[in-house]
Image 1 (cartoon, rainbow, N blue to C red):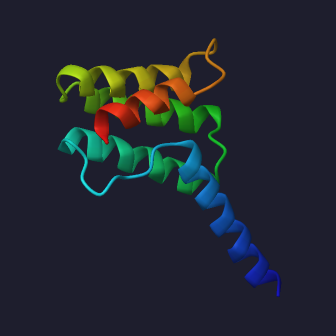
Image 2: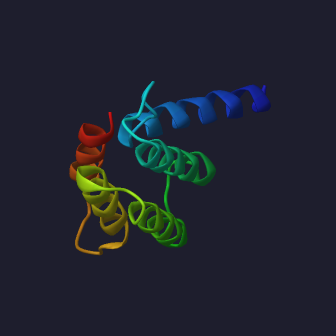
Length: 105
């Protein structure tokens, strides 16, 4: 019974995480967008819906490297999300998430 409850809890947590951060669309506009979304979703899945400082920094670094390969609005959206992850003055990722979804969906 405990294992079943843990699996249900994990599934519910994963579903909630996908509502908070961008989920992979059926067709991302570019390989850069697809990879950014994949990295974000993987970080959420691994961290259990709570991105600690080390995970945020690592994800930001990977997204920044990816943004260097992107162009235009996609570059700006990926860079904005990467910066928002590590900016102590930003307490809500929703604006960066919404912009990433707008540009990459």
